[in-house]
Image (cartoon, rainbow, N blue to C red):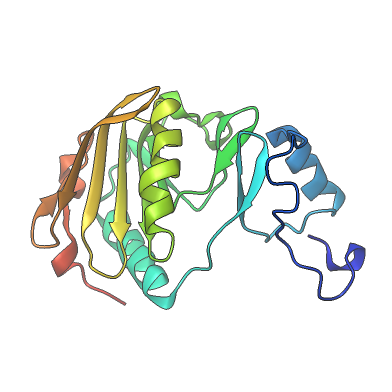
Amino acid sequence: MNIQLRPPGLSYVTQAAEGLQRRLWTVAEIEAMVVAGIIDDGERFGLIDGEAVPKHKRSLQHEVIRGSLVAWWMKGREARFHIACMTPFRLNASSFLEPDFVFFASKTKLADLKPSNALFAVEVADTSLRYDTDRKATLYAAHGVCELWIINAETLQTHIFTKPSADGYLERRLIEPDVVLAPRFAPEIAVKMGELPLF
């Protein structure tokens, strides 16, 4: 939030209204508050069913893995798809997430990116691993994201989710770092996490 509007030392999170109804925010309202300067443009959070949820702090290892994947995938990227990094990904009118990567067809403009035309999403997780593989994965599935990877930044194991449904992904596999991973839509950008050149 804009620090000029907040008393010093006031927490950015609360559970004071636990169990009570809360106001549902829309993506459009949040975007308008960013434009107006009420919410700082650099503040990291997701909007899940209308509730603003602060993002976990990223570790150095998280950034090393993310940066290394950027370099690897940009090297192997074909002109037929784009990669958005840590961009607000709108799931519906009241939910957005900020995945580490979203792949989408080159004919699609970023402004038109939505779950139905996303080819593949990737989250790199450390302290947020349980949340990412549970609540967040369920959200991606419920909105129809066809393939999701969640990479454990510490162990380099990868949770692969496919076959989305309203209740979650129907297929989930845990892949060890010494196994080649290839997204279904683009096998040419396969990666073996255990051999990924790290920064």
